[in-house]
Length: 474
Image (cartoon, rainbow, N blue to C red; front, side, top):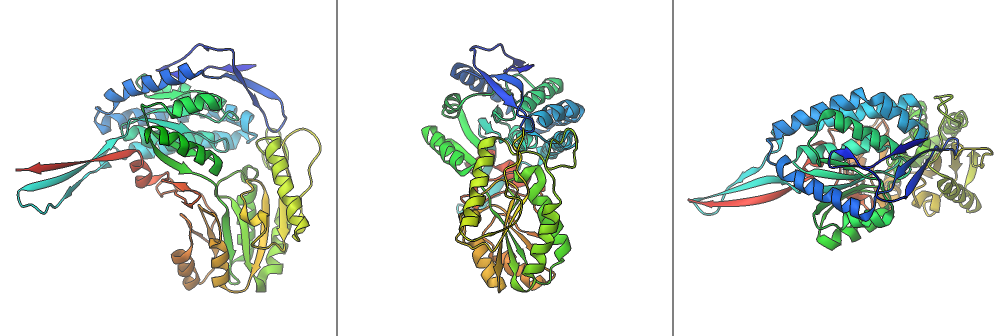
């Protein structure tokens, strides 16, 4: 059985304790690997190594750091089959999807490498005639990167690449559900020849993660995860006033106007809701449909949702894969049952399957209300609740009546409707006539409880910098 060791200061290290973290294939429930759990001493040593390496890394011209990132992008592409194979086993994704995720990770690495000559400061006019104000952009230092289970390879480089190009070094904690792909990335880091200590990757329990995140040399913590995890990170940040960057929960609303292309909208929404079994922060989580087309649209959703079949994607890639674990499945099923008890109509799905694997069927609920738990709380699974509305103003009000504000969707052919929602939606993103896809040249940032800071693009890269104002009297 596969056994992975932690990667720190440029090499895979021998375990200092007997703690092993079991990795389970969610499609079969079989243990497919173990990884060594880092001790607190190992986490502290990794931060110390990163801090020592950062002194030299930050002094390199950004163009030289970019050369390393291009080499890493090449290595990720070359290692994509091995990374994808590991990811497919630990996540339940198809090998093709998992391999593509590794290729995309290489692409976003190359994208951020190209910021090398564009990390710019400012010259600011002074009120004093014989004085210049110069604002510099500087790296923060050591960044702790906390990676989620759902897209662990892409998110790894989504955080690490901009941190590195800005002159920081990193200590990465992968999810304990999906750590083996992270150690395949470590092999790509070795292959690319990055200086020792620039990238460190350690699997660990929660106590060790706290030791990592509260280390005084950690200047920033970046997380993609739940609101609860975000609150915990904010507690960690308070210890040394570290900078947080948090992408947290989402409950993407999709507003379907009467003039929309209903067939396209239905296909798009079902694809969004069933990709990786709905375990995507920006997947459609609630659907608001104009009353004149409500019944027709629900029928289209039911047709497409009913056609989705679940199963082991290693055997049949066209199937919808599993949830991450049985606790997630039980939580989702409880939400569905409570929605039905509160008056929702089960159109399709909603039954716990028998047999191995953490599968749950594509589930459609109509006759939902704004006050229902299924509308107010994130499911992070293949559940689609539908609410009827009369006017666009009413739909906008319900879409905004929420704790989350990560992404949003509108289907319409009317530019006035599009502009009304674009100017009024309380979310970090709006997608018109398509579902979310997080373009890496954009800025993926949430409002409300969906987070602080953000990822991607120029603004995502600048998250990993701090400023220094130089006041020059002459």
